[in-house]
Structures are given as structure tokens and as C-alpha cells.
Amino acid sequence: MTLRLLVTGDVLRPLDEGFRPSQIGNILWLHRLLRRPLAAATGLEVEALAWGPPPGSTATPFDTPGFYAAAGVTPDIDGWVALFDAESIPREAASRMAASFDGVGAVIGFELAEMQKRLLTRLGIPWVDLNIHPYRFGPDLLFAVQTNHGDIVQALAAHHAEDHVFEPWADLVAATAVKIPVSAPVTEEVLVVGQTRVDRSLLSGGRLIDLRDMAPAFHRAIGPEAPILYKPHPYNPEGFGLHDVGLPLRRIREVSDNAYVLMGQDAIRRVVGISSSLVAEARFFGKEGVFLGNSPFRIPSTRDALAPGMHASVVDAWMSADFWRDLLAPVLKVTAHDGRRPVLGPNALRTSLRQFWGWDEIIFQLPFDLARQRSDERRRA
Image (tube, rainbow, N blue to C red; front, side, top):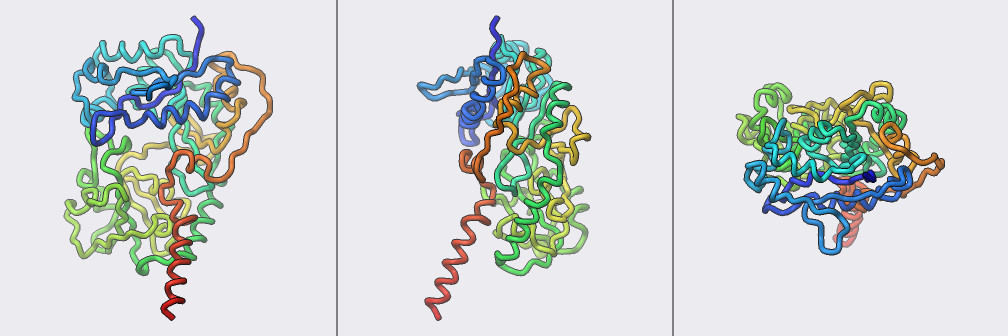
């Protein structure tokens, strides 16, 4: 059988408001982004697997409704929550998914579900999973890369960006924050960050959690008396359970300022959240980051510390065929290295994905707001 490479992702996740695919765009995006260097590295066909590809797409459709039925769960967010990290699934459901990987030499994923990773590992199929990295304050987004193959881990280590790469990026953002006024002076030492209602990093014990589920740890993290700042997630302004953990309202000051501007405030000493990327980023801004839940990523500070199960920080090496030759050589025949290293401009992935996570407010929007404010002040004068 001729081997092929398969690019896919969480083909089970529906949109919050209905049973329709939510990850199809990300899967097709990754396929188009990587199909050229993957093909050059291996000489293999590079296919995509997605739930509900649009008419005319070359992607192979996955029968997600049929999988949900075979798994015996409801076709909705609750069903996805039950499946995402499942240790085992019914035989028929497993067979349906396994059939999609027939003849696959390796899977390149975009934020694969934990259940998918387990099934692929049991099938003996190597996978390389690319995730949007939690450090989002730099010139562009980057990937946090994980794999189930020990030799691929070793190959990844040579491409892992160590902490010193990110430190000047954080310094630049912190310096920029000096030039951007906050809505009111910040004197609080603790910044609590909210999150969206539905997020894979909030899955615990087969359900989605919020601050209510972490009340004891939350109170230990914020201390007994001092006021706190609360920065809600723009897609979930309801409080993320904050108002149900027994915290007096007088201790809470909710703010709408940009999260990175807040991280740049000297008064802030600690950033608290369940699994927010801001908690992971906090240490680069000289703050203590406190995860109330489990951090979704284990990212080592140095290359030597990279171990199985961890995520490597890959800034831009993923663009080259040589990167994929390095990673896939332990499991597939690869072509000769060519030494080519493509270069993209700043914000290339941010713009392509249409995902900015507040970075745009610092670089683009806030300067325009300040200019407009000064213009209004001059007119009033």
C-alpha cells in the first residue's frame, strides 16, 4: 500500500451554538500551509481529513455524526466534552476513526483531541500535533509542537526556541505599555484573567470548569484581603464564575484595559487563571503566573530539557522542508536536505488566521485611539 501523510485536527468539535464543524477552517488552513514542505520532504501525497469540507474541497470528509452515534453520546458540546479526553471508546466508534488512517505514514495535526492522539498511538501511527503557542506577545504567532514518537522528540529539540528568544519580545511589549495609559491607575497586585466558556483547556473530569470549581485554590492564590483586578475574556464577559466563589464585590475591580498593558504595570505581581495563556506568559513580564488548573502545555526553558509529552516552541522552522525531513526521518523515508529557510514577514500567521488575542490593540488600535483622543483635545482647546 502506498503511504500518505494526513493533515487533520479535532474533527469532533462542534460549534457552541449547534452541531456543525468548528475546526474545518483550521484543518484546511494547516493543510494549505504545510502541504508543499511536507510533500517536498517525503515525496508523499499530503491529504486532509475534516468534518464537513465545503463543496469542491479536496479534503476527505469524516462522518462525525456517525461517529457520535457509534460512540453513544449526544451530538453537541456535551458529547464533545465526553469524547475529547476519553480513555476508551466503543469498538465501532474506534473502528470508524481508525479506518480514516488506513495507509497513513504519519499524521500532522492541528490541536488534536486527546482521544485521537491515544487512538493513533495504539494504531502505531506517529503524530505531530501543532498548537497555537501560549506565548503570543512576539512578532507573530508560533507553534507548540508535541509528538508521540521518542525519536521525533529528539529531532524537535534542535528546533526548540529557548526562553532567551522570548525575553526581548516581552520587554518590547512591556516598554510599549508605558506609552499607553490605563483607564485608572493600577495599584492591585493580583490580576485575575477570565476565559471563554468552552475551551479544551477547561476540560476536567469529563466536564467544563470555571472559577467556581477552583474556589479553594483561587482564594489561596489571591490572598485573604487585598483587592484584585479582573480582566474578563472579551467572548465571555459574564464573570467566568468569579461572582460565585464567595469574594466580596468590594475586592473586585473589573477592567477592560488591554491584557498586555495590564501585564506591563509594575504594581501587578501575580497573574491568576485556570489555564489562560496569559498565566504562562506572565513570567516573561516579571510576574508570578499561577495556574489554578493544569497548564495545557509543558514547555521547557531549554532544549536539553525537552522530553516526551512536552511541547517544543517552534518559531518559524516549520516553513521549511528540512524541518519536516528532520522530524519524519525516524519514521519515513525522506528526501535530501536542501538548506532552504523560507522567511515570512511580521504578523503573517496572525493575519492569516485572523487571530490577534489583544496584540493588535497595542500595535494597531490603541495608537489610533490615542491620536483620535489628542485630536479631540486640540479641537476642544
